[in-house]
Image 1 (cartoon, one colour):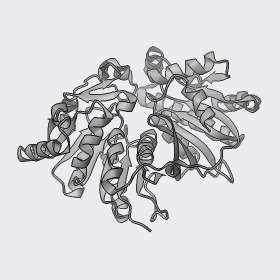
Image 2: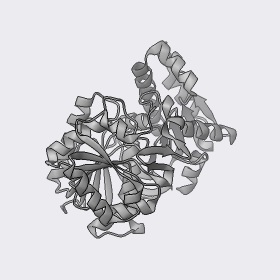
Image 3: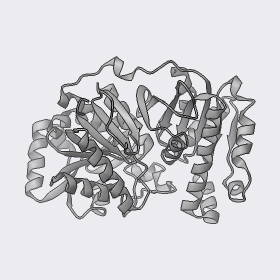
Image 4: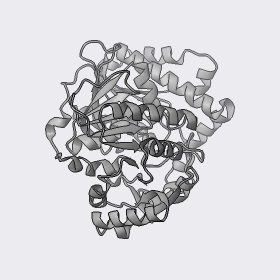
Length: 422
């Protein structure tokens, strides 16, 4: 087995495919594993992305899972480690971005790393340490209403400092604009001042590409998926169309959505407005013990032959809060995730071999329900969202194509466009 160049740890499943997508587009052969593999990787690849479901679990458990992933990646010979989180930097005051970063730094014996969720292709930019989503600050983007990790402070230095004991500093846009050597000099100065983590500004892909060479010698990088576009070049790799080739698509088509983000709400509305069949899941009925999963599958079965169907729990913030008020935040989220995952499994059993999943936590639950161990990364649908191909005992011989879409990603017509691409 060839030793891998880059070993990546992602804190959710959609974030893992987002990262893998950017690495593939920049020339790396990439495999994404679901959880930490139990044995060596039997594949000739340049990078491995270990997908965890650790964004919203207890910090101690997130640290333990991330360290297990690190140790496995080190055993595969990874030359650099990349901790990937969401481009909206969403977390709680307790973590898990800060605690995981510190644990990885300690394990790698490094006193310095960077932190930047910048992903300009998806309109996530960092300026003077402030995170923007589109033309507005993060806390005005809808993320302030996230049901699990509401983001009310766009200042990343402040957010990160609350989660880590190390000093947090800034490499601002004026430094990045001067290129890699200026970034290296700023890193050296910050280290001399005792800074352990530096938020890095980036408002364009050019900024990411400029900083890339300056990051080549750091044992650990922490970032969204944007920085990934600059890393393959550090390992002597260039873009290649062959890196994204997948088997031919087959079977029926469906979408399941558990995200309540602004973008996914719009995508659900667009799908319904296009005249395609859609069914909303009622969490109150779930809590009452009704067979919502069975009802959804019975509804979908006669419709699938005519084209894609949508089953969704997506709702506006007010409706989400009302349900949480009745059931509790964690209970409501877990209950809906498990229901959507069971529906996804049932749809695949009905012959759906092209499946779109919307929502990070939902994607994690669906992948686990389908017993998927690893995925081959294919062509990009929208920035940060590729088609993938995976073996699943539920899908049978030939596996299935699936895409795991972060709630905030994708154009308004994403659901329709995804199937057209295959």
